[in-house]
Length: 81
Image (cartoon, rainbow, N blue to C red; front, side):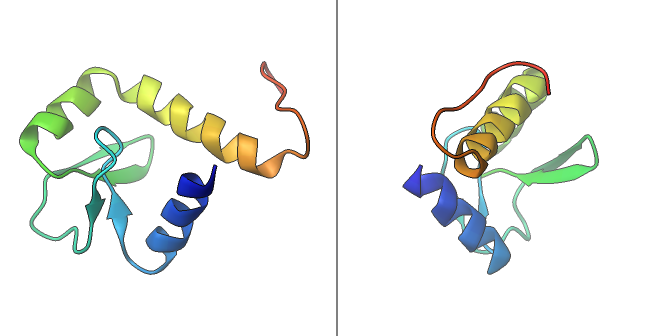
């Protein structure tokens, strides 16, 4: 969970993370990017961008699950809200 908190703080400072491999990108300019459901994702390589586009919903749900785990006290409840 600490890694997810660090990612949130890094994005607030203008740093971005590749959602596929987890690599930190200091300056997203010049890196491949893709937009999915009104959110821009940045990648370290075209290979990571291609992998994301094949399974974008899976990566988005994993990201939401990590964020939900940070926001909920105690146990995480899975399912529809």
